[in-house]
Image 1: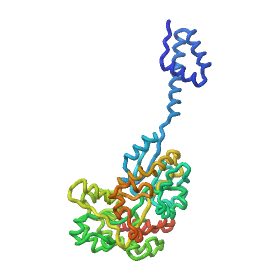
Image 2 (image 1 turned 180 degrees about the vertical axis):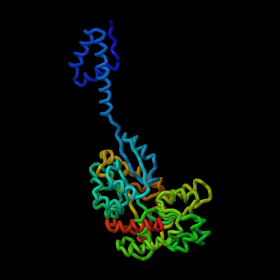
Image 3 (image 1 turned 135 degrees about the vertical axis):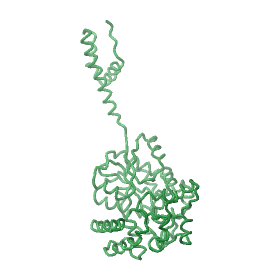
Image 4 (image 1 turned 90 degrees about the horizontal axis):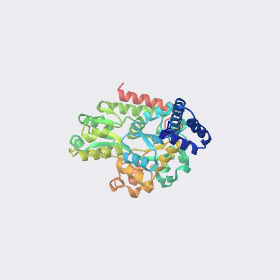
Length: 402
């Protein structure tokens, strides 16, 4: 009887021989040549099992590289993720959130499953103190030379020495509005926080829809600023004053939400939203593309507004730290972050990217404010644990009306 060896066995023999298992396999082949049919079948089964085992070992050794990213909704050109995978071979698993509070809850609970997250500066500072991030390995981030000193100086307030984070985007919290609907009801376009914080004025806009960010760390400072107080105040009485002001406007607010206002503005479902600058610009562009007669404007109120920073960081429990650093370094390539800014209409902290930005981005003072506007912008610092509890209770009362 002529023996026919399955190809899988011969390939297994060849590969294992290359791994210096030749003496053992030569003995097996010798057994095959000398034993009878029944014994030979048993040997062949054993060889097939060895071949399968070898294949599994080979597969596990070539495990797919991945980076798990948790970012804000509507906050990147998704082709950037595909380009990253094409260039590095690392797959991006990309999830989104729409509030800092959601992200913080996951981080403080531990075991997020993410390798890169994007908290805003105030939250980042508090989370650094809680030990939820790991220090960056700067030797793996050569593109950090592209970052902008002006932004680095401000973000150092939250992350001294930038030990834990890099800047992704920055912007302002202002007022997005339907220009036609607002002018019909108020007789003018928006330039002041009075439209939001004066209950009589806001009541005139109730019928066309008002949305407000579900973000106490931004709305309470805005209320304090409007009242002529320090927007970064941690004083309980000040916070109570802000709460009282916000409760007065509550009956005129259709919804507190941090992402739905984009499409709601674009579709003409609402006429006013307290929102983030780039989100409003996305709404403006979607409205223009729809050609339904909706025109969206954005105002940085003349009394000033919050200047915020979104930072990329690596959680302490990240599983793919090497891949996370590769992703951060990729994001800091000028052409990559420019593509992101051109898509989301947010300013970024990468100086080298500015020549690559569209003129409608760099030329818009609402995105890249001029010196006079920058003078009016304020930043805030983290609440301590006790103050945070006060703020959380106040905001719950504002949202629920109870």
